[in-house]
Image (cartoon, rainbow, N blue to C red; front, top):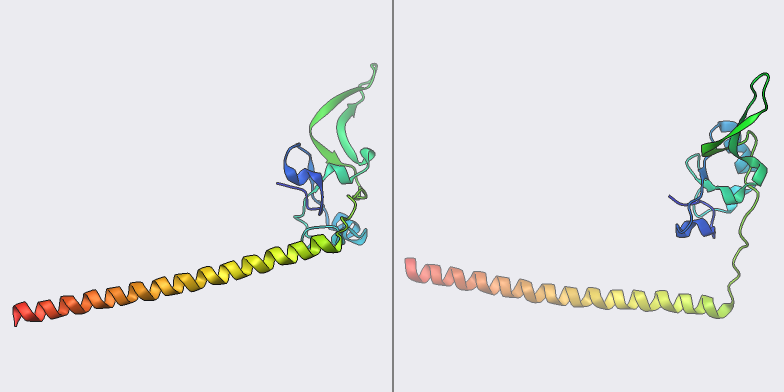
Length: 151
């Protein structure tokens, strides 16, 4: 699984990060109103996962603190980090800027691939028609031989 935010380094899968989804309707609405919907790779939904890199450090709870009467407080690390109530993703990678040359290269790349695909389709169509002719000819020969020997 990877982070929903476009350009996030977590997508590479090299480092393990905690992923969070909005767990209530109110949280989903707050995230959506924050402008996160424009930052993702597709439509933002309740199942969209956002990694810990997009939250403030204070928003991610990594330890639980317990108080026991007559002793000091002690903390236990959580196996799975959780978000504090009201946490909203607010740290996003910079948007990549493309110069005109790289855009032209990308357009060229797609145009060449489309042309190659069309040529490949034409070759396949030609091979298919040859195969059909061969099959038809073999069928014709079989019928002729059948009638020759049995009639």
